Image (cartoon, rainbow, N blue to C red; front, top):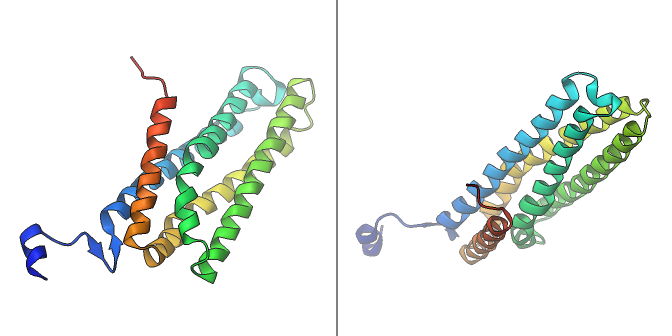
Length: 192
């Protein structure tokens, strides 16, 4: 330990990585992963809570609302925070690029699955009923894909970012995430 570290406390830098910036960025992302898991569980509770949603009415509307809440949070709040992070990792390692390609493909597939579900819910609401089994199947596929994706982000992606990003890049990532947090706060009305 050098004299500056002894005087100022332990170093914030480990192997060239700004630990505070990396830790702050991942705390925010992991908190959002928890929220995404909760939103998936809320969808699943409606789906498994009986057959009322299969015939239109309030339960179908609740299912649709929970799906849209998931979409809004995932696409509008969570995903923008990863843009700089993923861009910083891209091109650094063949293994990391392969993971990013898989995550991107799964993300697109998840969007397609939810779009199909919402179309089927419209058909059910208009008097169809044969689509309920397909809705359940598509939502189960979506949940499994998303949970796997979140797990890979929390483990493999986090490991790659720790290995590949420099202190300056972590600073940029943390600043970008902070800007997105501020944008989200401005979009969310204050509660009384």
